[in-house]
Image 1 (cartoon, rainbow, N blue to C red):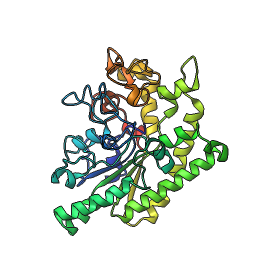
Image 2: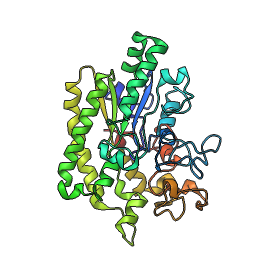
Image 3: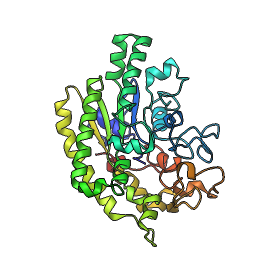
Length: 354
């Protein structure tokens, strides 16, 4: 899991003031998504990986009630965001062989569950890393060639320059760090700095390819995901404070980087998305948003079930709308909807977007 997106990030891109509830959302020509499972709308089902959600009970509340590779019971942030901005109903994965010309012109999704900024993270799950081998950015380069063939060089450049590039990654990097040999060679502060350098390199490359407007998500409180709580063996099932603290320190470093990074990239606008407090507000006040279960997923025991372990033979909770998490890692569609400004019961975007 990486983070739930908050749509008021778009208001920040268009204007630093977000106090007016009547402000019009900016019109992007397209949105491109890079990252991991919170954004992956089906790329992984076209890869030889076990990090899959193309089976029930995933997708039980998705339109058509079918699994599509999305790690949730329903739609993900890219779907909700595309719909809110009236680009299209869903966010199509780039590896889908049935992409239409309209899909190509209004943006596609390159995210891959299990991936990270650190290419070694993706190698463990055989998924699409951000920048190595068969990587997400290489696919973006391939996309650019296809787009130029559809609309021509001039319009292709215009579409990319007026688009939003949405990046959510890093959670898998740190989740793997805690249980890898890397921890013995590098302390957490040094690894945070290493990942920050990777982020900087990734954004620069996307800028060189024509991107100008970016939304970069910080880490969520991944120490509160059911799987991390289970691995901590805490009988009280409390969040793993060490991991959450490390996430907050990383987020502070990321925020400090972005103004200088924006200044170094001509014509760019980079907005930080505070995924940590967006999700933490729901976890700390679940009743306010209509949730009753915050430490177990809806699938199976809710302790460890994710991907292939959450399957047709796994029992499902009776009331999915009461759960923050659908499996032991990923939120329910209702969480993503609660984190969407403009919807009943939504969060105050001013706390969520900095």
